[in-house]
Length: 279
Ligand SMILES: [Zn+2]
Image 1 (spheres, rainbow, N blue to C red):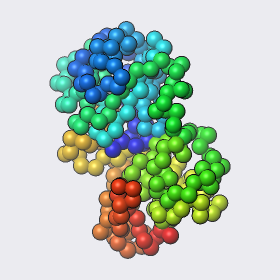
Image 2 (cartoon, rainbow, N blue to C red; image 1 turned 180 degrees about the vertical axis):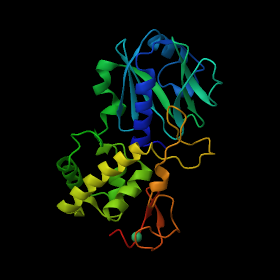
Image 3 (tube, rainbow, N blue to C red; image 1 turned 135 degrees about the horizontal axis):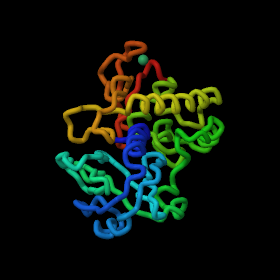
Image 4 (tube, rainbow, N blue to C red; image 1 turned 90 degrees about the horizontal axis):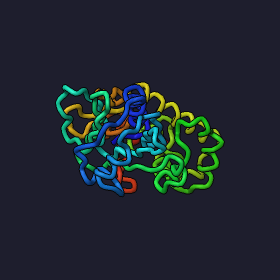
């Protein structure tokens, strides 16, 4: 499932590939891939517009268009964007195809059709309900250790649950939450109001370092044969899976101490940790 690093890699790919291109028409729209409007309405709202910039907030992609509108997209479990040439064969599981005036297409493909996109007026973005509930983006320079300390103090939740709550700060999902807890040597079950000031500072550094490293590695792709896999806008897998220390490594020896990595269900989701390295 794409988290901040994977969405950031997609954003960078789209920024390079489609900014400046004009949308000629939209076809192949699956009804579940568009929220609050039909495929025909989506086409009418974006036709003739040029991609001006690709932004991101947490796991949301924001495609700003020249006509004062923005396409907000969330990839959920298996969504991906691919840019293909006029002669390329269609992308399997395409749920929307934005034909560009230069002959290429921006395809939104999604095996499970859980992701979606919608179009809003760019000047209304700040008041958008799904973006409005998000805290600051975890790679925003304003996400400081002081900001994190305030959030941590105000919460009494278990650390991993806190990290997943997008209203604290946005971008961390289930994979990176377990990894960050391991990196900082703190149990995912510890209540955040029990963190010391030094631990909170280390936590802040671990969040930024882990997400930054994952972006540099092109994100995390697990099984390259799975149709659910995450790929960047060029169709390339990420390389960060080799760097994961605990996620889906339960039963295997900890890379630091040799003890066995455990898995526990925490709020219906798997949490991976080393009982010896994390207290
Ligand atoms: Zn260990």
